[in-house]
Amino acid sequence: MCYPCPVAPRAVEKSLLDKVWDAHTVRELPSGQTQLFVGLHLIHEVTSPQAFAMLREMGLKVRFPQRTFATVDHIIPTHSQKRPLADELAEGMMQALERSTAESGIRLFDAASGHQGIVHVIGPELGLTQPGMTIACGDSHTSTHGAFGALAFGIGTSQVRDVLATQCLTLTRPKVRRIEVGGKLATGVFAKDVILAIIRKLGVNGGIGFAYEYAGPVLEAMSIEERLTVCNMSIEGGARCGYVNPDDITFSYLRGREFAPQDAAWDRAVAWWRGIASDPGAHYADRVALDGAAIAPSVTWGIHPGQNLGVDERLPRIDAAALEDRPSLEEAYAYMGLRPGEPIAGTPIDVAFIGSCTNGRISDLREAARVARTGHVARGVRALVVPGSQAVAREAVQEGLPEIFRAAGFEWREPGCSMCLAMNPDKLVGRELCASSSNRNFKGRQGSPTGRTLLMSPAMVAAAALRGAVADVREIL
Ligand code: SF4
Image (cartoon, rainbow, N blue to C red; front, side, top):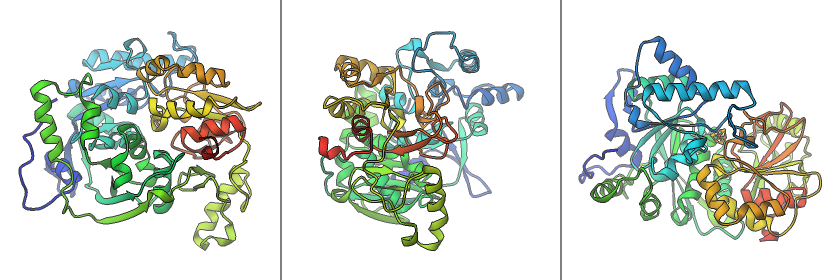
């Protein structure tokens, strides 16, 4: 990777979005959009096969193979990853990715590499994700990488093709909304609760046309892994991307990682990274403030992430809602089978899933293990722990986490997306209700057309697994 010179003093104070956008602009298009150079392209087995096929049909080659990295995550089973995979379709997708990356000279992190994992987990942990970058990936939750102060965009299959062929994307510059979370989080309240509170306040469509800049004392105190959780769900609030300005926490996380700059290049990079943080006088299209101390452990109850509430609250009454909101509440209650006015705590669950690109990192597993070691999974509950990557799994093994989870009755699995999207054998069955640390609670998201999802933090999922019902993790911690 190479870095532009440190940013020179400017007359106009700018946000990180404007600085990084300007630094990567190839040209402004007559449409008003920007042709933007993409510093890092991450691909996986699901959205890349058609893109490579289109490239072949057009007789084009990958323009910058050294800026593209691949992994397998969505379809890979978590019971056993022995080849050939039992599912012929999954095996075919694996082989297609292996063939395409080998032909194009793209580095593939497969199961044999020791670095395989969910694309949004391995990018950061390998040091591929860096501040000031533009990043694209054929997955909605690419916003995750904004935790480093990068502009990271989820893209569709035809855009994957475009980036492979040109290393550029055509995008509309979003406005920037600065979201400041003040105060200090209480015990039992995590990054997942912060982003759920933000989406509850602003709505699932509130971020359309915006990039979210997360700031304030709560974000400044967060580790990179916690910031990754917050940025991951920017897309669930409708934002095009989300980011946190890079700081010493960012730099110390990156230092020494395999793809991070080394020696003199490190010093040059840090100077550039410091310069791309938003200026104190930067203009924002909107500003929003939340009190972190007022955030409770949160749980979704409906069919999108905005339908969430504190674990000590009661489900919303339809007759108390605005007229225009009632149809979506009625639809959510009809699907979820829950009753308005009842407490969410105590809702029985069938499945507990700890993992995904939102909450499958080592710090997530540590928090869940802290809860798991206090008891045993309730009778009749199926509980899975799926590390986000092979590196996370190795670290967990060193810390003895699999033994803690197994002793408590959880299954310990191989890395992958698992039951987040269920494009692999990990699926809900029928109307099962799942306490999940993932990011989407849409109808049928976890593999069963009638399956139901309650999103919450990994510690809350562990608490629900032990109690067999939605529980307040603060009572355990
Ligand atoms: S864990 Fe879920 S959201 Fe994340 S990349 Fe995999 S399927 Fe997508």
